[in-house]
Length: 277
Image (cartoon, rainbow, N blue to C red; front, side, top):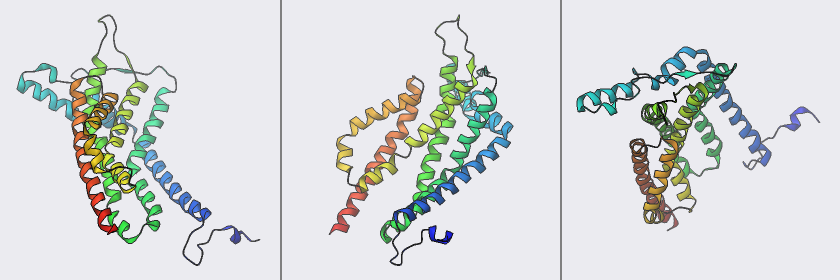
């Protein structure tokens, strides 16, 4: 048997075997992984810019959000609005702590930047199995999914993260206890908030697929609107510091996305009904 016999060729009738699908999926996963590695290496090489201008910037007074809030505090004569005027001090207590943090952060940044390409590869994998109508409807799927995720990440980075740093970094149970924030704790908080918010912003996409599968209907979403709001508030509380202002800032866009999702579910239901006639 020659090596050529081990390859999985597409059958004459145009269908693909299970192993052919696995081979195809492997190619998409490898290309996605390469994209992540390439961007992660680029982020690793740009260490000073990555940490000084992006990762650690939200705790500094010169950060855009902090400057805006401090300007508002002066205009409204409300000193409490000025956030991160005194930046928190970070410490590292592990011998390899700064190096491992550098590697982990570079990998996370590589994943975030690669999201549009990863979504594109997933779409390329499932596209052959779609009918012409589904292909036409999913034409903007990559842009929408990537756009929602990156919007959530940017929303968290420019708003939730600075508020969280200000609240958690300055909170004290007693004046006898000073805050010395570990670098790893700071990085974990920032990445968790940004990634979680990015995923939450995918709500319309999840609703679309659940509606297409017949699991979710617009009537169900309208009927359970109050329950959904409670869940949204709970999710906002999980990814933000325990202050009402931060939870409201997260909850409001999620409420808006929920209302948009109801309209999306309604459009899916209407289209399904038209196609069934």
